[in-house]
Image 1 (spheres, rainbow, N blue to C red):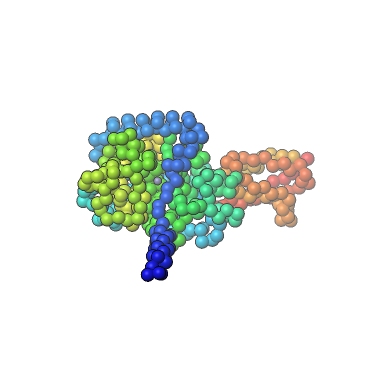
Image 2 (image 1 turned 120 degrees about the vertical axis):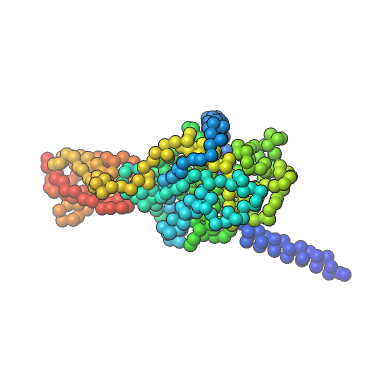
Length: 426
Ligand SMILES: [Zn+2]
């Protein structure tokens, strides 16, 4: 009897250890998109106004096209910017391709787990008509495999502060958002899986795109359960195409009490996010009646294995976003392969004047990329070097300290090395 209270305490103690162990084993999905965009709008009220205007534009398009039963397939060129600290984080091309495959299956409703969609939602489950391709042409018209990589030995985890989106802060610059969907793959700090700049008139083009944490990208190799099936990117790209979370991120308020809406008529009202993988049906304060909430929607927070659908309304909203704010994507040449004749142009170097005196102007599209420019003398001795990271295809080099003679100018870009000869005469 004497020991009973202690027994009770120790049971509680072990129960709490067990609970914390369980919760450690069952990570909860966290997407920073809503708080990220809210913060941006607090910092710049013009963005909040632009958001309202944006939603109005999309709403109008949706109303005008609500009765359309067919839509043509739209293919979005994608560039993947991989940032890594240790080699494991430098994920393989195969892992990246697996993510593109997941996107294409999920957005076309060709995913193998459509059988898990409850019958109550079959009639609204959608093929969005949206597809994705890894870019074959870079912003400059040159060939690419749609993947950029950069090692950063001083940064192991990244915050939701966009530093991965600029070369000068250790990341990789966005490609033209009018032509590409930019996705940065890097290890996010804390338990965040991803975040996205929502589409808006007036938004910052250098920040446009999705960020996805490395271990939730793709469905093979360096991924971790329960976010190992590529659905984080399916979710984040949904945001990039204008979708909100079904519960409206309003602290549990239902739409009829003034709570936020996801602007979609065929997703049931929902009070808050769902985690893990519950059994259907699930009811909450905003969906007390059958069929309950649509926790298997890609825009909820359930585990990857538990998500399997977008709705017709969501498909319409994503297509509306493409037709209004992201219209230029529809005519992007980002996935048009580069012809042989174009390749030479891409790696051409021209120097002017030649012979040169004190200044040499170098023009090459290779300078657009992060390239090394070197000048070597006829003995192969390097006498000048420069690292380019700007987005200008021309640069001026001061050569006044070099003696008269013949030199070679060499440019090393991530894809090729080219050299040309020039003379200095005074
Ligand atoms: Zn989200």
